[in-house]
Structures are given as structure tokens and as C-alpha cells.
Image (cartoon, rainbow, N blue to C red; front, side, top):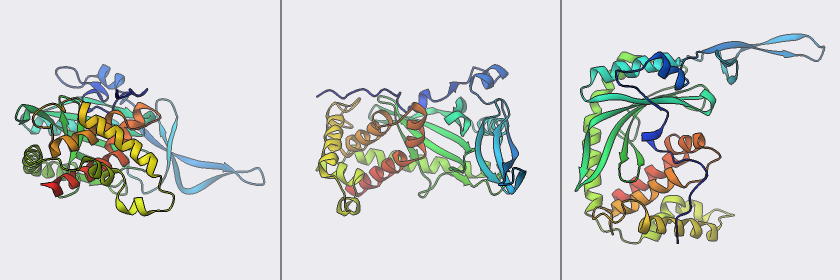
Length: 311
């Protein structure tokens, strides 16, 4: 059985957005990355039953300044983090931390999400299995996500990503109901080294632990027991997905390495590869959103927790 290709591109961190040129962001790069506009609040106006225009109180359209496209409807309490402010903050962080460099940036979903990616020079090694370390800065303009700073891991041989959480949470997360204190965010960056070291130790244990029942693991990751007991659960569809995951476990990129073959590390990477490369999505942007912020990220984290239970 050959693992079928998807029409949309994989949600690979190393290819997200537009690469930053040597020397840092330039006006041309900002334009290419789609980050030169500002988000502006415009009043919500409607025509009432009598044919008169009225303004809806305390509600605004969030509009892109470059093309006047609406992004969402927000309240007067909504605090905007402008794309250029996010870029300047990311640059400030990378200049303050040795070995960290801003490498990519861009927007998703017509500007509803802004993502900036910084990469550490050092690479984690698991018996030759390389893990790149990233910091991702994101903010949104669609009310669905907060302003977030998160640590990301990318397995180089197969381009699978994983969010490295600090005590189950992102390094920083703030809703748009309050201003972002960028100085405070810089203070949270100090804890990331400990989180990364813990993550590498966990991964090393995964490479040393036998996989056990792979079918049971995949079922528990994608279909927890509560879901399997729910009315309308389709067992045959679940088995079809598990079959694809079993093929990913046997034939996916990097699965023949000693770190993966017959180990919990192999199980985890079959899941992350499936989410980033094969999980259904209407577009490449939607695949990134699912993988980094949505149900795909939750699936990866559940896979990680279940992998820890096997150690």
C-alpha cells in the first residue's frame, strides 16, 4: 500500500510563510510576506426597517487597510496587535537571545492569522535523529485565537512538527481584551530552555521504549473511549484511518531509523506525520491552522501524553 498524496501542501514549519533575507526583514520582504497592512476598526452600519442608516453601538468591523477586506467583527474593548508590531517584537526577541534568528513569516487565511518563526542554531539529537527548535509568534484578527508565543519542534527527516508546552501551556498567551506587555513576554522566554531539555529527555525515553499495541494506541489518540461509546460512532471509518496510520508507522519518512523502528517514538511520529502531511484540509492555510492551532494540535498533544504513559 502506498501512502496517497494530498492535493494541499503539508503544514511544514520550515516552509511556512516567506523566508527572511540575510540581515533581517526588509520592506520588500514585508510586502512579499503580506505584513505591510494595518488592522483598522470601522463602525458597523446597517439599514433599519425604515430605510435609515444606523450605527450599531460598541461593535466594529476589523478591516485590512490595504484591500479594505473585513476580517471580523469586534467590540470596542478589542486590542489590536498590528502585523508590524509583531514583526518588531519578534526581531527584538531574536536579538536578545543568542543563537535565535527570525527565519520566516507570513499570514494565513487572508490575514486573519499572522505567524512569525524564529529558529535556534542548535539542533537536538536522538542518536542521529535531528530535531530543530523554533519559537513561533502568532496573533489573530478573527477572534478565534489569542496572541501566542510557543516553542515548536521539527523532526528534520520527515518535517513533522510538535508544540513544546510549558506545564501544559504555551510560553505566553494573551487574549485581545488587554494590551500585550511585550516586556513581560520577554521575561517568559527564560523558561523555554528547561522546557526544551525536558522535551528532549522525553523523546529519548520514547526511542528506548517498545511500541506495544500500535492499533490500540492510534485508536486512543484519534478516538478516545468516550468518543467510541458515543452514539453514531463509525467503527469502520475509524479502522480505515488506523490502517493509514499503520502504513505511516511502517513506511513513513524516518520510520526505518533505529530511534523509530518498533518504538514509542515511531508511534508518535506516525501521528504527527499524518496530521501535518495527510489530514484532510480545504487548503494549505487550513492545514496549517488545524496543525498549529486546532484539532490537529490537540491530536498531537494527546499522542504525546499517551506516549508518556507507555514509558
